[in-house]
Length: 414
Image (cartoon, rainbow, N blue to C red; front, side, top):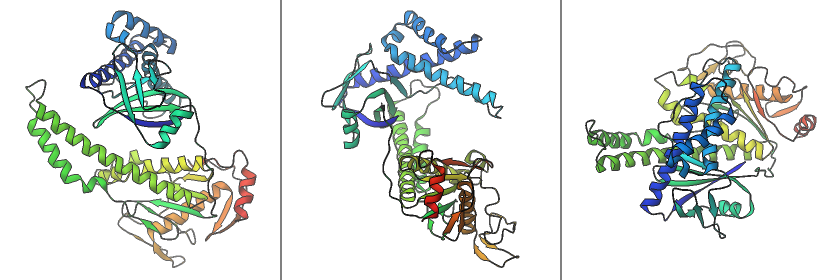
């Protein structure tokens, strides 16, 4: 599935209020489905579909929502329930019990309840909320996809700067990648966002830190205008809240844009990318580093590495970070060091290099071992089978559809 996004413009105040009503109704149906599952044993997906019909008969505002959108809301509830069952079956520590939604920001339509204009410049929502016609503002690629691809679903998303329509197309993105013969191992960090085995470093721009003073100022304004004894709050309070939300949204978009551009550059210039599979949820428990770790956005960056590896048919491997900073990349001797020690000095072989560079070399060697390739300072050849993949929590983005032997030979010939 391919997802494209367009902003909904040129609507009246009544139309946007109608969109809010549709979103709240979708939230109501989802919460009712969760409550029905809690109160009744053995409830399945079909029972939740039946519940949608019963709610439409009981509440007029539920009937106003398109029937397919009601089913999509029930499917959201079932997704949370099925994920809970899956985690229980795997005996995971955090089960993720389904929770009620208090602030839902989207409603999803299937193939009915909406209609695109012939020129794909506007969309009409035709359910009982009388939303009407809204203009679509998007880039050229999205406009082309609207003309040539089949749309499976339309999701309306509310953000602080407006409303957006997300189109889910029945398509898969595949592109022809350019193969360079290069390999890279990436060590993720805070001093340097990434550092590879050649000691090349990328410094993160710290978008949250740069906007922190402005965020504090806007947050103080919101707090001063909030009156806990008054409901609803004043218009000035909501204006201040929107200004704060827009700045948070800007920082989020800056971080995402950075991750996309960096990941695209790394995968485009290398045939094999190996990175450490960090457990960010565990690392943020350190309250001294939590803000910096969240601002860095390592997880988002690695997700985009996997994405571009798939669409360009390149090997992107995630390896366990265990002892990558401690082990010597030259002789394998384990040298214990604290986080404040930034230089790796091996007493066994006498090598002295940057701690992050040493870790990047170890990460690259681990990834090459998973692929069955022996790496020796950018000269590598076939070592053996890649059947050990996943033995130590490593994961690989598959390349060259179902032909691992051919992949090994190609790497040997580089």
